[in-house]
Length: 150
Image 1 (spheres, one colour):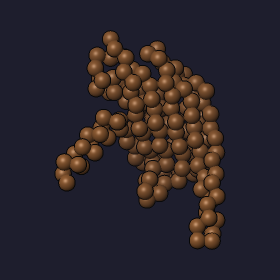
Image 2: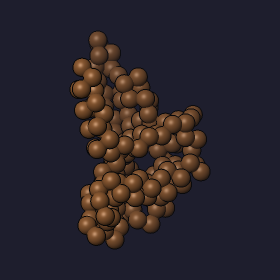
Image 3: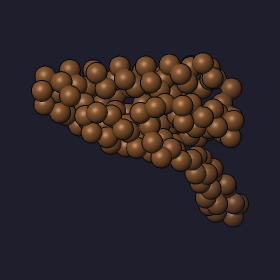
Image 4: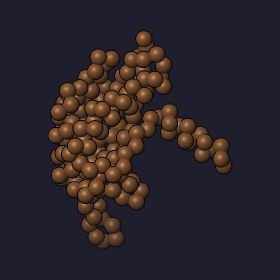
C-alpha cells in the first residue's frame, strides 16, 4: 500500500486555561505517548511597545518528532491565551506518514491516531471545551467554496 503524508491542524480550547499549568499538563501528556520522540517545551516571550506602553506576549512552543512504522515526521504545538482573532489555547500541527489505500483513508486513519493518542489522554488532565481537527484538503475546500460564493 502507498504511504501518504498526512498533515493535521488541531485547535483546542481549554476551560480555566492557565498558560503555565495547562502547558505543563500538555507537555507531560505528550511525553507519555510512545510514538513521540524528542519532546521539548520552550517558553517564548516578546516585549512589544504599543502607544508608549510595553505589552508582554508569552506562550509556549512544544516540538518533537513522530516515530511510526510508516516513517516519522514531526509536530509543533503552541500554547497561548485565547484571543478574538485566535479563539483557542492549543494549536497543533501534526505531520506524519500514514499507509493506506488512498489519501482520504490515510487522513482518516491519521485523525483517529491523533484523537486516540493525543486528544483522549489530554482530556483526562484538562477540561476541553472545544476541539477541531482539520487538514489542508478540508481547508482548501473551504477556501474554494468561499471563492465560489463571491
